[in-house]
Length: 285
Ligand SMILES: [Fe+2]
Image 1 (tube, rainbow, N blue to C red):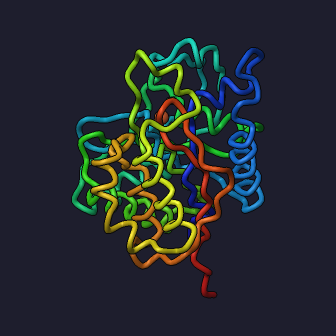
Image 2: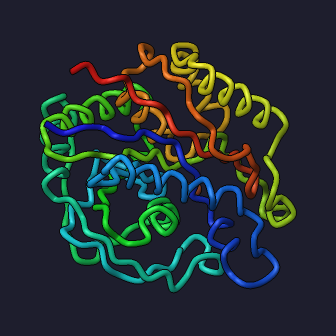
């Protein structure tokens, strides 16, 4: 029987990639780099076989999709920000077996899902940036699930439940990563560069900080109640599908774990970012 060994909300902002390149941005996201490395260290320590990543940059418009390739091997350039991320070579094993179980469980729950292995279906940077820090030896399989930008929080809660059922049916130890922002309001282009280290508005910053209080104090019921509104008012990245999947996986309002914040909250090009590891319910043997 498979096991969920990690559930974490993580940042993937391109400025973390810039932070390790020579030049004027070198080191600007050091705390986030260390937090992503710590998540990787914990995943290895807990014996994870697979990183199951809800990738808010693999945006789907119809249905739910898994990249079930046997091997993810290519070179990446971001179409969104080619000057930030380019020439990123990667090579990770995939997890077609778990992808198929996830598909089956999503379909069993009355939703539509497909698994793909097209040669040209590459990884997106919400998977690649974290993997660079967490999976340096490429020893852990990588299975991305896309985020449907027109999906509801309720749909994604059910996807999270399906992920949990699929993990239970598998023989894998799975580390789930919700790779996305907190608030995600990009500033206007004319001022975007001046907001490299900032959050777009004080309202968004205050709401994000309140959300972090809820996560770290175990006030999940309160959080999931406001999640649809939070997504709408604070311009959720990828419809906050990653966050809804995360809490769906953890048991929604019944989850009472207290998240462990692994880096300070920070602004990046107007968006709110953090890394939080959510403790898993104690196993009853
Ligand atoms: Fe993003």
